[in-house]
Length: 202
Image 1 (cartoon, one colour):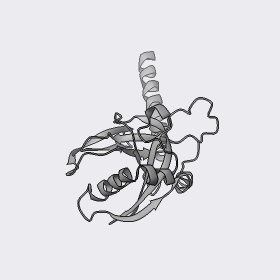
Image 2 (cartoon, rainbow, N blue to C red):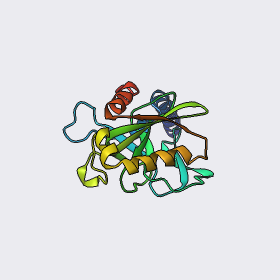
Image 3 (cartoon, one colour):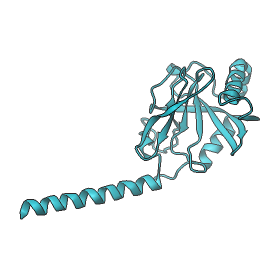
Image 4 (cartoon, rainbow, N blue to C red):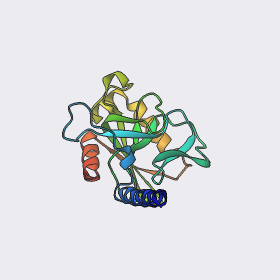
């Protein structure tokens, strides 16, 4: 009788645990990508980018909010040049059901990598479903930076060809005419966009 009781109790506990985990996912679909704060950061103000698609690849990947893993989209790839930067999203943000998209300018990182970033610009586009804003970031760690700018003004002065490459790639990677350019915004706009759509701390 006792083993039967134990098995029943264990099953009930597991069921309750699944319910709790499911509720947590409903409240915070990107909770699995809550990176720890950087050392000394007690404000929670650090901004993290999470990689879905590494630079230099054409295979499309997306975060599966049910499994908490970045998974390959079957039989889907970019019919264009490979991604010029790591593509993913800003952790702890959500806008109309999805996190804010991000391009992280540095060497290729593995899917699900989370890295502290500094936003330098916002590429604003529009497609058939509406506005599509992409946060353009560099790593916070200077040792990982391939582009050493922290301001949009410097980005368009010192690396303007890179800006045009990113712009033309993003506008055309899903087929000509899929996206149209709205414009560019600076690092202050990027910070405000992130803060406006940042998830509340749990």
